[in-house]
Image (cartoon, rainbow, N blue to C red; front, top):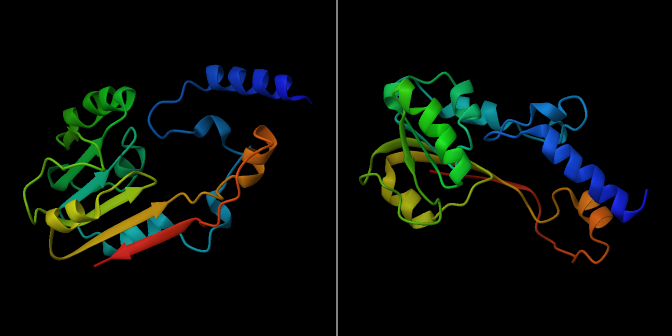
Length: 175
């Protein structure tokens, strides 16, 4: 398959997928990247999440992962910065009573100091100073970030001049 055919297939897939938030169920059974990781993000989050915890999910997408945690909505907050996902969150999370706010994870977060017991962030931007500010004393920040070598084979297939990058896929847990 040549580059033009690959691009046509990619665009057709994008059109058919109708992605909302972080719901990639249209590729189930076709591509599952996280099954080969040496950790399980959900298990790590659940290890630190208690029913009493005040929880914030930064860059929640459409709230799919957040909702899968079944945490009490009154103790749950989320942010998102991507306009289509902001609208999705307003329609899904706000009616449930989840404190949703449009915010850029790299910027100032619209929450008071020391508000959260647990802050999670899966592949989104974040500002370490803001995380420190909004966490309660003894609070926990759990993040899973995509490294520059993530999907390296796909990048090289699509971009023959893809640059080398030594940064790996990583998890960071900060108390």
